[in-house]
Image (cartoon, rainbow, N blue to C red; front, side):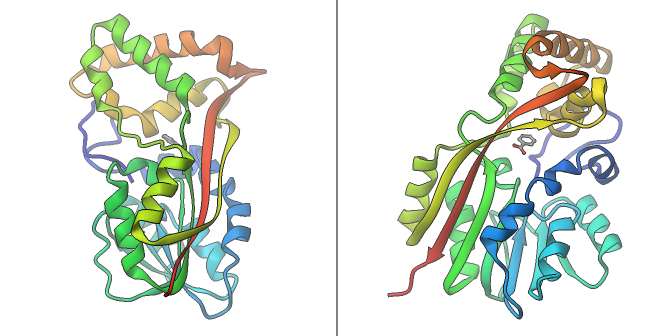
Length: 267
Ligand code: BEZ
C-alpha cells in the first residue's frame, strides 16, 4: 500500500509497513470499514478479492459471511502477519497496478488502500480484468480534501525547516467523486453509488497519536532528513496542528472518504 521511499525512522523502510505498529496503534483503519461490508453484502459461495488487505482482518470478516476470499497487498510484512493471523485464507503479495491473477471474482473489495496508488487508471483496468461479467467493485478510500489540515501542517513545517522540496514526496491520490467516476466509466463500469463523506477520526494513543500516525503513514516526507531533525519537524507539525486537531486529549484526523459501488456491465 505504500510507495517506495527511504527514511530514518527505525522500523519502516522501502515499501515496508511495520505490521506490528500498524496492529497496535492503527487498527481503527479496519474497524471503521465495517459498514462498507454491508455495501459489499458478500454472499455464500462468492469469490471475492480484497485489494490492499493489510493484516487481513476485513478479509477474515468477509469469509465469515460464507464467501471465498483472496487477500492481496504489496507489503510483504502485512501479508506475513495476515498469514499468521488467518492461516486458512489465501493471501498473496501483489500490487494493484499489476494484480497478476488468472482467476476471476464476483466482487473486488478495497478499503483504505487506493489512495496509496497514483496510477488509478491501471488499477481500475486490473480490477475490470479480474471481475467476472456483472461483478461488482466496492471501495472506500481517501477523497478530495482528505487529511488536508495534516498535509498543510506537514508542508508548513517542511518549509520552515528548509526542506520545501520534500513536499514533492507526497505519496497520496485523493480524487473527487467526479474524477474517479469518470475513470471508472471510461473503463466501462456502471456506477450505482458514489459519495464523499467527512470522517473525523480519533487517533489512538492520546498525546502521541499524531506522531505515531506520521511515523506509520507519512515517513516518505522525511527522506534525506537526519533523524534528529525529523523529530524537531514533527514537534513543529504537532504545534501547528494542535489548535485545530487536538481535542480533549485526543488527536482527530480530518479524514474524508470516497465510497463507490460499480458494476462490470455486460452487454
Ligand atoms: C487514510 O486512510 O485516509 C489515510 C491513511 C494514511 C495516510 C493517508 C490517508
